Length: 128
Image 1 (cartoon, helix red, strand yellow):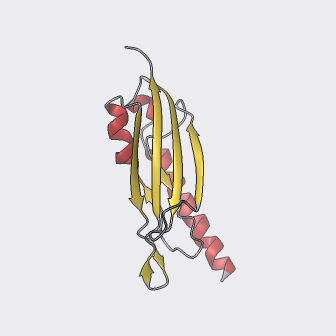
Image 2 (cartoon, rainbow, N blue to C red):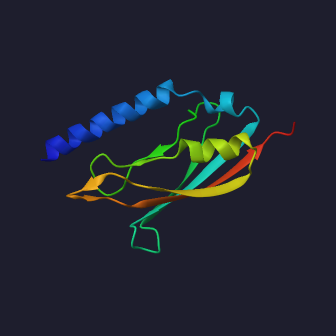
Image 3 (cartoon, one colour):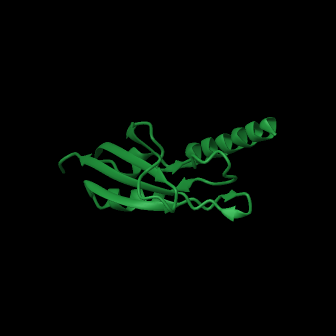
């Protein structure tokens, strides 16, 4: 069972890396962007507080214009969060602070995972 889980994790990592490699670069999509920080907090659907949270500081010069996070539930199959549109639209509008949520649609046993990722983004742009 553990070997199967490791193979699945390896497959998902490889697929994610391929999507990142084929995505346009963030600097090309939002040339005036200088700083982007994402505070990511994940929780169960029935919880008010986050189980996990962390801050991602995006390296603008190298980052893909693709935003995805894995579900932290180790029993979740084919889950995760892809929130590129929720990040890129406000960045293109030069928003300096915005937030959103995304629900994991993976499966835990015979039910949908349903964990929720909440993000708060702060951005800084060069003057035009």
